[in-house]
Length: 314
Image 1 (cartoon, one colour):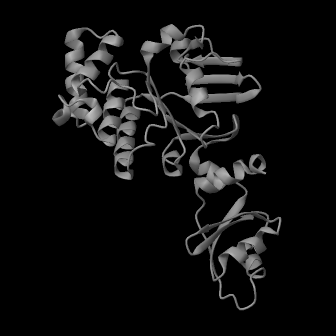
Image 2 (cartoon, helix red, strand yellow):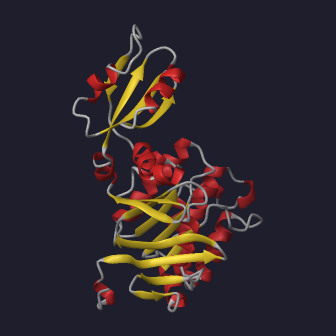
Image 3 (spheres, rainbow, N blue to C red):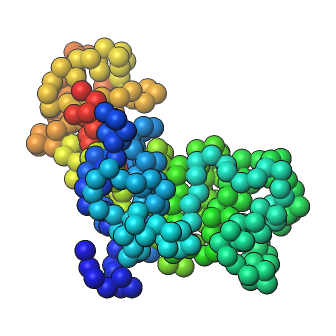
């Protein structure tokens, strides 16, 4: 790890970061290098270690093994110094529901040590930025899911942190609010805030600059979403024909078929990239007179996830 704490290219560096709870290994030797000013995503199912990893990176949970460096600080040793430089938004709404929007924001400003004149100015800015002016005096507990989400993000950024942790922040809101939320994240990133966000939504993961796929506490693969999709070693092909359930069983009997999943009236098949002409090869496996239509399609992150976790699933 570099010595100059002020000019480190990475906001987060970990080496073999691990956490055990008895015989359960929640995070298994996780190595991370997260560049400053980027949005980095943790993608994985519930129980894969995303939240545990974030709690260690914020200093809330001590690792069982490994080294953690966040914003040039040795964690958890220097966790107290880190807390005023980071923001943390949990999956569950954690602000005071019996306080108004403005009262919650002023309370969080006081927690982070903002002087009253600065806090008043900052709260006014946040109410406008997060479209909360009409709800300023409304109790937080009576707000909609999307409004609570915007309030939680405003509270997490009231002190203008260098690094923002978001633990599945959009799990309880509709697609329109999720999209608007991500626009706010890109605004923050443009202002040089580094963001680490965990999600199990594939479309959200594709918005990240860099991505890590976790499964059972292990880092399965990492990189830019585009790179991961282009280098997963399979060709995605969609098939339209009758009796898709029977066809799926038939195709999966071939080791060159890495995955087959039904999407409505189509079967999405992942064919080993070593097959030079996968459409022609698949046509030879179709039942006689099946009248099947085959089309090579763009890979997506669900394909990447399936390929990255195949061994674990089996």
